[in-house]
Length: 267
Image (cartoon, rainbow, N blue to C red; front, side, top):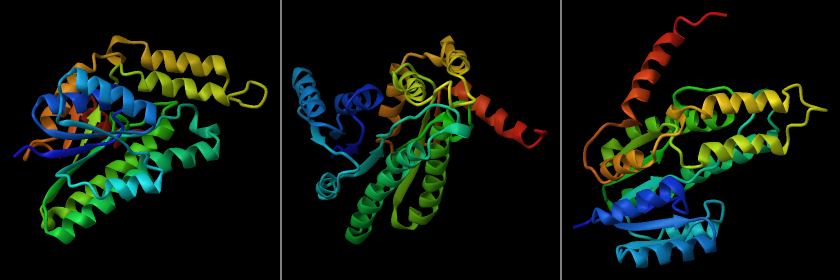
């Protein structure tokens, strides 16, 4: 029997592509999006592609009625893919943006996951939880520190859950995308210029723009997302595989070296 997969954050980019790819692969997919116009757009796309196994629903993770409804769906795999990005210097980041990022990227998916896990455990059902993290969950580039911190926290949650839930037959893994050109990173970079003000901030707008351009302006930071989508379509429904999945391989190698170098870093 095909597995039923609930995937959050399917309104655009990586989430939408993965939902469509999983449906093409024969999975029953509940693709959830944040706002009603995204529901209509993705339903029309699914119909045009003849994907009767791609169901589209609204799920705003901050709306308790949406979440309560989602917890009533019978699923085999939960993919926590929804998230937001705030760029800018952590040393001057407005506290309210820090709180909002953790609310959306950590607290909300954790609450949904806890609800799903409780239903599975009470029913004696096995299942799988997948967190879309980031390479930023394993290292911290300048100007992306807030987003990286939410991903670091998500990594800790996933690692702890994996050890806690194994006895119940519930698997937990992460997928850590590199800098693919989905528009997410570019949009995140622009968010800083909503509040950075040369009259108040010691981080100047021109300097911040140069930092972002240096990080996102290279071919290595603008990779074709179809590679990542194909990897996610393979990883998500699989019964076995790596716990941590960094895509592509050269970034996994870089991160391993980065973590090894951290032991010798000096002031």
